[in-house]
Length: 114
Length: 109
Image (tube, rainbow over all chains, first blue to last red; front, side, top):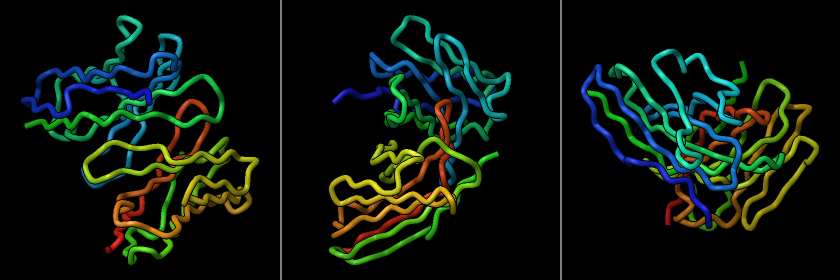
């Protein structure tokens, strides 16, 4: 069964550093998403991406964050100048363009900012 | 903004019993989905119910949706120890979904 692949599975970074979280969505999917889950809390929407542009973003997704689909297969989330409170599990998801189909989530990247 | 609440927050049952989890939301939706998350792992899509559907089955899962009450329930029948996980509803439209607070299910062998 097709999978969404995320790398790395765990990343530790110093506060103030930039990190790039990588995702390979399912190849025929058209919509891409980033969500995050702070330990023990809800899964929160960050951003959706379609047709090479952001279609919607949450208030969490401020200028510190950016997304890119650089080569037609990878989908990346960049976090500039990381803060302690950015520590969370970050999930990438994708879905087809067919209405009423669920999302396929990756297994997540655990980001720890120290 | 949309908010979702699930109850109970935690549920502990014996293997073989049924488990029911409820989800409530506040605005109109196109569909509602249920996901499972094993501890520290990713989210696995279980089932999607459209806003014009009232009930849907998939194996041991049964989902109901009442759009007039803005609520949904997930029933897991004949639970197994391997069903131990957190279960989340996710609802919304096509640009994004909003996740509920989750129910932590423990199935005791």
